[in-house]
Each structure stands twice: as structure tokens, then as C-alpha cells.
Length: 262
Image 1 (tube, rainbow, N blue to C red):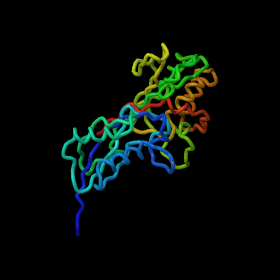
Image 2: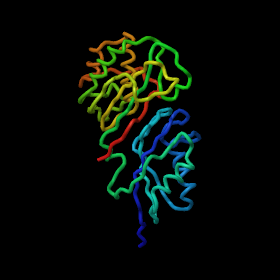
Image 3: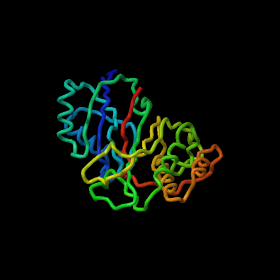
Image 4: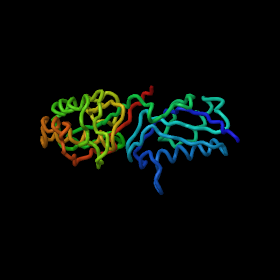
């Protein structure tokens, strides 16, 4: 019997999601995973490999720090600096590899992620420079941002987030813990074409359900417009809530800011 030798690596990556149909490979569309595997196939030649992402971001969602696990067969990477340089030279300009390190065979890029922090970047009450569009959502109506800040704090802690899962199944695990959730003035993402004032919703937790953060921000937008109340949000997180959120905030303001591993 021939035993295959395998080598395992954790690669941190950044990407601008605006022109991609999300992470996961799909027929006939350009995705982040497709472009990464296509690049690896080119630089590795005939060497066999496979990749597994730490999370499946939606179409147009970006990552300041995402992660993937690379499984290499037969031969290890001899020089990490040279590998990163070659990888980045051949990746599209809106994807960048940040780092690589070897991990053991027990490492699992999905199960071993300790916390993920997402940011939702937005402004309100004005039309912005078109260059903002890839990473900043423009809400044209004026919003009560101070009330939205109070609403964001309601998501902190352990709650029933079934109302914040897109097309929730009957058997899903909806009791989830948000380690921190706050809405602050944006001083994280800056450019000379950004509006004078913008904001970031910062959400940190172990894992999130489909469209969860966009649904959370969607209800905060409705709160800022005066369409729902703080009590409505609090009740939507109760164990008995049957509310179904009907407004998903646009994807292009959402950024996977960081992933920490065990």
C-alpha cells in the first residue's frame, strides 16, 4: 500500500469582493475560490493540492483578513517568502495573500476559528463619490444614528438569532453568542473621496448564519428610519420570536475584518 504524504498550510488573504460572486465556486461565474485555485494550479504545475476556506462570503462582500487551508501532496513548500511572492504576482490585483504558515494535520480551518470580526461600513443622508461603492453602503435617507448605536448594543450576548437567519430551517442551531456589537464613527477605513462622516458596525463572534449580519444591520437601518423600535429588536431576539426579517442590507458594505484561530 502506498501512503500519500500531505502537508498543511494556513494562508491569510485579503480581497475586494465587488466584482466577484462570493467565495464559493459556482458554474459560469467568477468567485474568490475559483481565482485562488486557478492561480495555485498555475504556480504549482502538476503538484496535487486542494483548498478549504474559513468562511463563505457572499457576492460583493470583501475581506480585510480571510483565511484558507492549503493541502499539498508529496512535496512541501520550501521557501514561504518565495511562495508568497510568486502567489501574489499571479493573483488578480483585487486578491492578496498576506501570510502563510505550516499547521498540523489536526488543524481545521473551519472548526478551529475562534472568533470572526465583521465590519459594516456606511454613511447616511447624502449621495457619495462613486469610488465609495465597493466598501461603503450609502443610505440616502437621514438616519437616527444615536438610536442605531443603542440598537446595536441589544445584539450583545447570547440570544435566539433565528429571525436573523435567511430562510432558516426547522432544525438549525439559532442560539448564538455575539461577543461584541457596537456602532461607531468610522476611523478605520479612510480615503480622500470618502464622506466627511461615516460609520462602522463592528460585530464579533465565533460563527454567523447566512446573511445574519446584513439582516442585523437591515433592522438597524429600519430603526434609524423610525420604522421599528428598540423593543421590536429586543423582542426579535427572544426565544419565542417568530419574526422574519424582510430587509437584507446591501452586500458591498460588509467586510470580514479578521479571523482568530485557536
